[in-house]
Image (cartoon, rainbow, N blue to C red; front, side, top):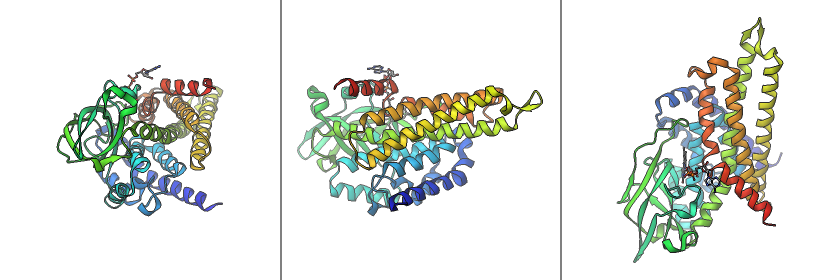
Length: 379
Ligand SMILES: Cc1cc2nc3c(=O)[nH]c(=O)nc-3n(C[C@H](O)[C@H](O)[C@H](O)COP(=O)(O)OP(=O)(O)OC[C@H]3O[C@@H](n4cnc5c(N)ncnc54)[C@H](O)[C@@H]3O)c2cc1C
């Protein structure tokens, strides 16, 4: 086995151990109370999971997408919210990795690594969801500063992150060409937050609006050159899509494992329900979808890590397929548990609620299908 593969397997094993020992026992409670698990955040930080995507000198795996996906899949098997914590951290960090200069990387990565600083990716707005180029948050140059005004919505880690990777337009008339990326630090005057959103799934994750009211930041906080923000955002989304796929695979695997366990125990008509062919076929179909999704996700991750060709289409396909599989598999798991599946005493209904958002965020599946079709038809 090559050195890099050994390292990846070590990360997967460490994530699986943490998931089983620390996260699984807390998953039901996190979902029920909706509390953000600060103690887990601390523990995950100490184990290096908050810096997973960073360069090696900052305790990370040097942007290795396969390692990132391994950790997210393992966490998602037991708790969607906890896997989202690592995923959102990666998304907040990637724009700095992709667009930041060496002093910005030194400044932010050191704090993420040494002080468990949390990051957020702030792109979506009320009028600019799927239609990203319609974002209205402005960044007006004033001397050596920028003045940010606008409102982002649905931002994971809003109000609890220390660093926000923010996308804003310097000239509203030029739309996508004028999008620039910035880091806004918590505590900056003019940075505020909306109420915490009440969500049907991923209930331990904190999602809020992020508001900028004459929020002044120095030009040193701009990532890359002016107008490079759209590219930074697109590359971030492309690189993190396999991770959403891995999250979906993990949630689906967790539901499949539970359904198998249940089917082997539940007696009806004097037999375990797993002895009925109807249940066997459901389980076989669920496993087929999970394995297919996993193959797609890790094929995409491997291609990204090896820097082979354009991964945009494959990463969209992997995210779409895996999230649709997660929705179907978790719904079927509820079905296999019958009435018990519908009760909160069993984890599969939580998994079904958590799975739903993987079809929505990091660009909704309908929009990704447009991207795939566009790539195929343009030639
Ligand atoms: C829990 C959660 C966490 C999130 N975290 C973040 C975050 O950290 N940072 C961030 O920036 N954003 C975040 N988002 C936002 C997320 O990325 C958006 O919700 C998503 O991109 C969809 O945008 P929208 O909600 O405005 O839906 P809309 O764009 O209004 O879409 C509504 C529906 O119309 C469909 N649709 C839209 N356009 C087309 C089209 N051209 N053709 C066909 N169908 C179309 C969509 O697929 C969707 O089904 C989060 C969202 C959620 C729910």
